[in-house]
Image 1 (cartoon, rainbow, N blue to C red):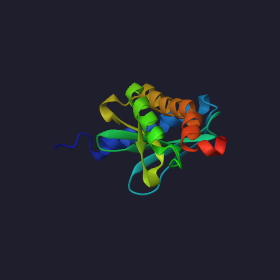
Image 2 (spheres, rainbow, N blue to C red):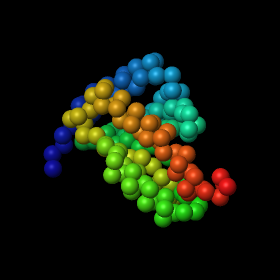
Image 3 (cartoon, rainbow, N blue to C red):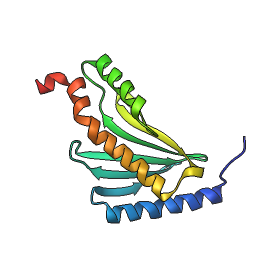
Image 4 (cartoon, one colour):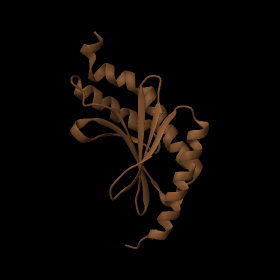
Length: 152
C-alpha cells in the first residue's frame, strides 16, 4: 500500500484545517472554542454551544489518508437499551457521511471519515454542521428512551 500523503503534504493539509477552523469561529457564534490536541495524533476539538444539548464537541483527527470526525452524543443508556440501539440503527439508515456508534464505556457517538482527496473548506463545514445538527435533533429523544425514568 502506498502512502497517499507524505509528511510535507500532511503539514499543508494541517495548515489549511487550522485556517478554515479559524475562519469558521469568526462567522459562527455557536463555536465557543477551537483547540489542538496533544500527543502523536494531529487532532482538533471544535466546541459548539447548542440549544437541545448544552455543548457538542467535534473531534477531527488527521490521518494519512482520511480525516476522521466524531462527536459524543450521550452516555450509555441506563434503561430501554435495546430500544435505544434499534432507534440508532434505524437513524443510521437515513444519515449520510456520519453514523451512530457505540464507543468507550458504551457511550453513544456520531462518527465518520472523509478521504483527504475530498477535503475542502466546504466539506469540513458540512461535516461539522452535520455532526452538530444531528446531535441537536436527536439528543432529547435519545435521552427520553435511554433514561426514561428520569423524565417520568
